[in-house]
Image (cartoon, rainbow, N blue to C red; front, side, top):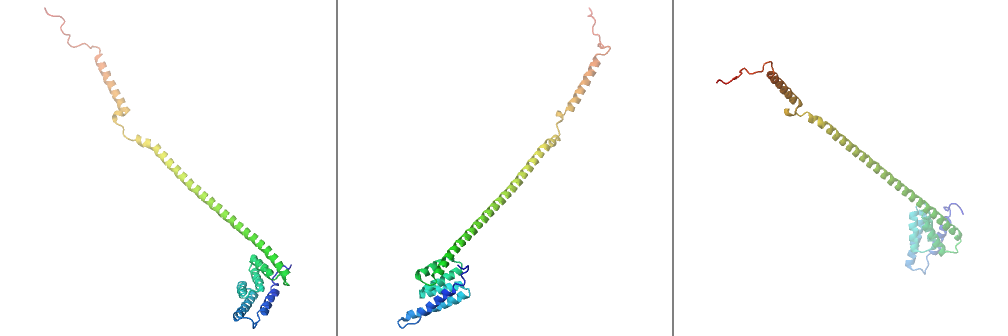
Length: 235
């Protein structure tokens, strides 16, 4: 089958136009309401065909859909399928192609329309695969972002913890320094004189000197008393 289907719409669209023109010719048997619906359907078809030619496929789809509601001709279904195909809505396009074939199974372009159905199914599968790939890629990005955020949070927590440990270490060092300087400061406090060793050493020396003097005074060459007392009692 041809690689592109852009050249195909003209023949079926011409067929749709022919169907509208032939089936839409006024007839004496037509009621006034039916004739008015027919006229409005032809107007919507013309609008849709013009919009399709200029690439405004959304407007063309809307016009063909309104035309089909006014006059349910199978050719309008084909035109709607063409609009969906141009809009990249391949599943919807395949649906309307099949619907067209179900109503016009013996149309001369049936084989070409079947090829379009197969093409739309293939492109729908490819589109679905690309969509899944994009979703997986987005999920991978989200996972990577979550991991990066978790790693950053962990790194920030480690930095905070390290800062806390350093602060605790500095506090311990400060307390240790204070405990080392405290005895030195306490040693500078004046001690009562009764507890000083040199006071008692001096007192001991003084006592020793006094004792030595007394001994020397009592142990001289004549230590007898100046008075001999009574040698004998007078009778």
